[in-house]
Image (cartoon, rainbow, N blue to C red; front, side, top):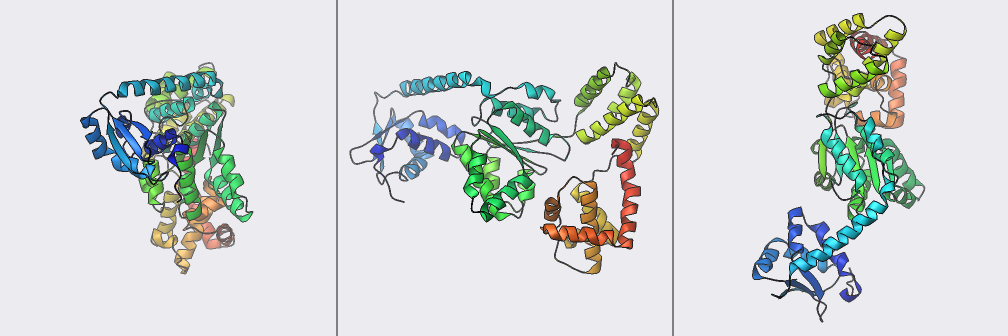
Length: 443
């Protein structure tokens, strides 16, 4: 890389580059204790006020300062001990700069509106994630960057991301499938810069379900560079997944490392406080005629795994009341079902385990290239049930089924529809499994 005359480069850029290169944020304190000047031979003079500060800088951050500086100039880095130098005056200048920035943010406060967060139910299950999200909306790029939110399907990850989008004008939400399709389309059409410019033009980028990038080297690399861009330009990026970063096996190590350098928090199933608030609000909206106190307490005793379950139950309560059936019997049956069976989540892992059990084959074989009849039938059954009973797209199902193509997934579905034996297995699945979920959620 050809170096440049440092006198023609703003030292503020050098300092910012050094700050971004520090692995430990506490080391930033030491940069507040020094000033930088350019010497006659284009060396970087590191001005300190005491031997103690000099020794601490040498020990903690000197190598980083030198490596960053030499990206811009071939000059060396030299300490200048000036006992008249006071870090306090330098810090005062920085504080004034921050105040100026804060004033600008106040003038631009119309960029955000926190009122959409009023529609969120907040409890111990999601308080940290919601608090971090509000901080991002108020001051993008300043804290919790990147923000990584994970949790099981239906706990409110997508709703939180879309709440952030509604709260901040310069933001965009994109799900993994749209991100992937836009990226691939950009490459095929030779217009990848247009895609990059679009998603990088906002202050807050929100990407949902990034677990579906597993096995996609190109898009994983693009995600890594996108995160770096937002970090380096004081913008925020928020990622959501149904797996925590450490479980994203197959992602580049440096991508996982970037994610872990921000804030990682989970969203859990709705807690009792949230469930109580939901039932209370819904009952008030129906003139307190929807549930009795006893029925409310019975529902509060149930272990709901997601907001989708809760919403399904609420829908049943409303329709029962509207048709004059009443909810006493329904709530009693619901408690009985939960006590005896618990709700069965139709996750990819659950469906895969079911298909493997039916044909007595190893789950790993279903996801492999093995084409024996038993394994193929199990794979076809897995793909068909995923398509019919989950909200995943064909591309997403293909990723779950061992990184198979869109056309392969369609072919499996057609084979199931034309096979009497496979149809029998599907009917068994419907009768034994879906009955429980339909009774619980009204699906």
